[in-house]
Amino acid sequence: MKIDTHENFIIIKKTINNFKDFVFSLNPKSNVQLCNKNVIIDLLEYDGFSLEKLYLFFELGTIFRKSNNSFVIVNNQINLNDIPDEIMVVPTIQEAKDIIEMEIVERELGI
Image (tube, rainbow, N blue to C red; front, top):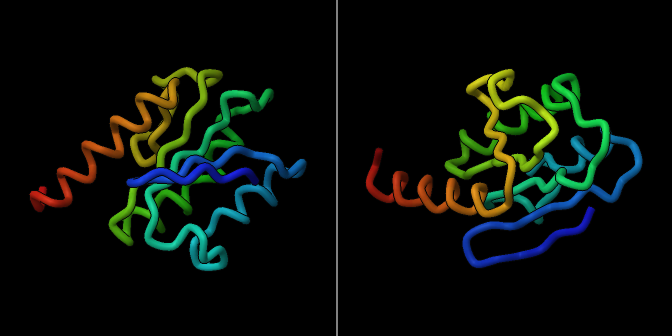
């Protein structure tokens, strides 16, 4: 995986061929680089993204939220109306950055 570090978040791009291995590598319990970080998963260039693959991220999203961190997936291949509310998916990197900034402010305000 390729990690691009920013002040308030990191952006991760898939470079591992096996999709399940990629998702597994994102678990902050086993990957210390991701502990206490807000994470954007950039899947814009990944062909074949589907709802089935999206559901592989369900548990990860829960882990990040429980630790008061954001977890946003960026992909424009899935109909946003089909995505469950428990998983945050947006079509652009800028939208992902905006969501993380909003969630940071909400956490600071105790919302």
